[in-house]
Image 1 (cartoon, rainbow, N blue to C red):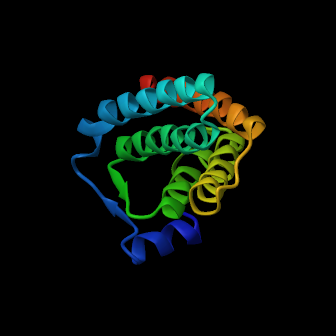
Image 2: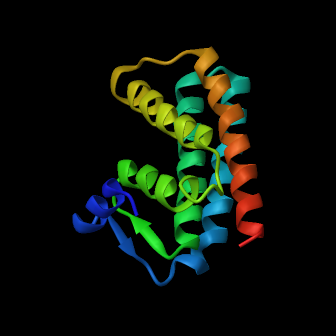
Image 3: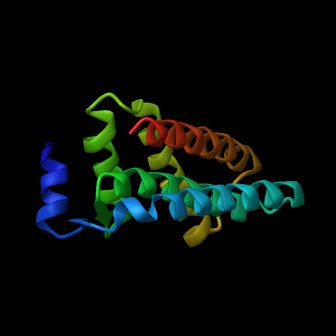
Length: 143
């Protein structure tokens, strides 16, 4: 177990969550719904909302993964830490998905707080959110 994960546990930003497994399918549905809305927003030229919804699609995919291990996050940062500790370090998920989630988090914050977003980054996030959702479904189908 890595030090960041231990720190998140110690600070109660990641907690054991006995109901996690029963909520996995709800998180997958939320991820798929957010991705669908992001695609609709893209077709209308709403690139800020594409950025926000693509990030939340990835967030819900990530949450499904940690719920499957009976953990719950209390911070977006610690969600990423948990995914790294529970999946990447165990070679069940490629690090590129964590990198994409970290980038999406930054882009979502920039879009939300500073009005800074682009069509190109929005399009990239839709693609990455779709890949992350599919990989999440694949991992969960084998666990």
